[in-house]
Structure formats: structure tokens, C-alpha cells
Amino acid sequence: NTAYAFVSPMKLEDPPDPNGPMPPMSLDGGNEQEYQEYWDYNDIHPRSIGDGWLEYRAHPQVKIEAYWFHPETSQLVFERPAVSGKGRGPVTLPGSTLQPLTGEGPEWEMSVKELKKALYQGQA
Image (tube, rainbow, N blue to C red; front, side, top):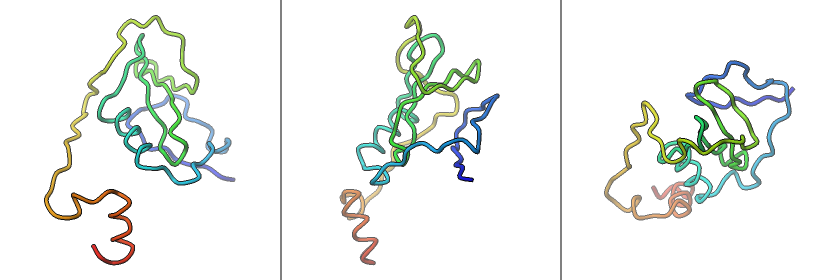
């Protein structure tokens, strides 16, 4: 049996079946653009589509697909719910204290690809 765990601050009344099928995996494990989108939707700029529904993105390793969560009812769905649009827009979630990373030195000037290469070659 194959199962996976998705770590999230959201609480579900009926968690997904751990013996259910796994979502399709990304062929490249996620690229920088997918990770930026993931963090933008899930941490930096959460979005409400209205009527209490929040839109999120799955982890880039599982193809960064959209999903929607309703915190008041603990509903989690993978098809966009029909909403009136009331309350649509950016939201600030409780406990959302993500601060920008800052630093000095060559590692802060490298792209992710350059940094991975330097780490792999033992240069960092």
C-alpha cells in the first residue's frame, strides 16, 4: 500500500483515505517558478475566492495543482466551488508571520540552480 502525508495547518473532519491513489508526481520535482507560485498562494498572499473559500496550491512535487479549503466547515475540495464572490481577494491568515530572508555573501547572489551546483560540488 502506498500513502502520503500532506502537512498543513488546516484541520480536516474527514481526512483523505490513506490507502487512496496518490496524486500524479512532478517529473522534475518542482522548478523554481512552481515553488514561487506555491509560496505565493500558500504563505505570502493567500486568496479568498469568496463565501469563505480559500484557494491554495499543492506542493510542486505533486504538480502544484489548485485546491480549495473552507476553514469554517473544514471542507477540502479539488474542484473550484461555485461561489457568489462575496469576500473575494487577498486575506491575512492568523499566525502568518513569514518574513523575507536576507543575508550577505555570494550565496545570496546565486540562482537556486547555481547554489545547488556549488553545494553538489562541495564549493559552498
